[in-house]
Length: 264
Image (cartoon, rainbow, N blue to C red):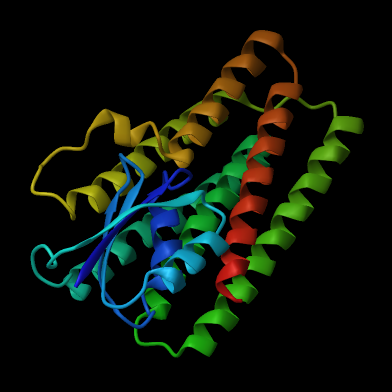
């Protein structure tokens, strides 16, 4: 048995952990995957060579780097798939619920920041859903669903960017900063809770370190929409909301391309 440690510089969110699981978990010889989001490390317990695992991680373009490979025995027991499925269902429901909340309030309040953040929530929901679907599914089916999900996400983000451009040019209405701030703050709490659940499941510690929370892209995005709401209040301008919306849509596009890589 061998233990290989990878440092993955862009693995700062639980949804990215699940992308990695879907990409390499089914490879022959893998016995256990151990994720440390705080340090951005992935430890793989495996038999045989590491080349196929390293290649799969490289295809995701998350900045993976093999740090070391040593002889070792797996630590602890095999992962409880039933517990993992329940956790995935929990975070999927939370993310999809906030997708609906944010996209509805985003259009009501005229905030593209909230609409864009809702698509980021949807993107996470797709990843968690794909992770659940992948359990026991044949490889061809998993790849097909990943490809369809990636293109669906790209399409939504494309329409969002077009709408942002239209609003930059034509729309003069200022978004409702109060709705932006309140809904984004609630979404921040929801994302932090999801991250807490996923991290707590891998540790005996009953708490989550603050550094784990604030390295999450989702929480940073929520904070960005809150900041945009404050700037809308101070400047009485639509532009802070549109700028943040553009940045979040681009993040969603990046996530879609990562999902598409699972279909290869």
